[in-house]
Length: 153
Ligand SMILES: [Zn+2]
Image 1 (tube, rainbow, N blue to C red):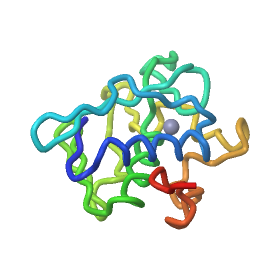
Image 2: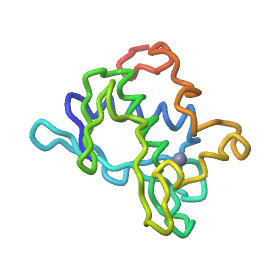
Image 3: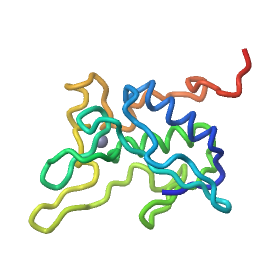
């Protein structure tokens, strides 16, 4: 995955907010943000696949990867700081007004699923008391909610 118009500090801040507000410290970089040309490359994953934000495979097995909701909330946390951020992943472009929270079909004809079902977020409210499945229920209501790393005490 890569992104344009965003600094590494802004990506780190988005990750921090995500972990503090929703995912309980379970989201980490698989590949830390790294500049190449005008873009920054990065990959998100989870520390523990059984914890918040962990993905499941087609057979329901736990996979060491971050789920669709982690990415949706992460993009939102970046857009809160940098509305002009442009992400691209797997041939899709995601901007503030287009592409985020769009589901994609995965699986096969005999086992059709959508990407948003490949995790436990549907039940997250029952399990963890937070609803990761509904983007409108997110805790990032305002920019004032976001801690500012540039703030000097
Ligand atoms: Zn999920």
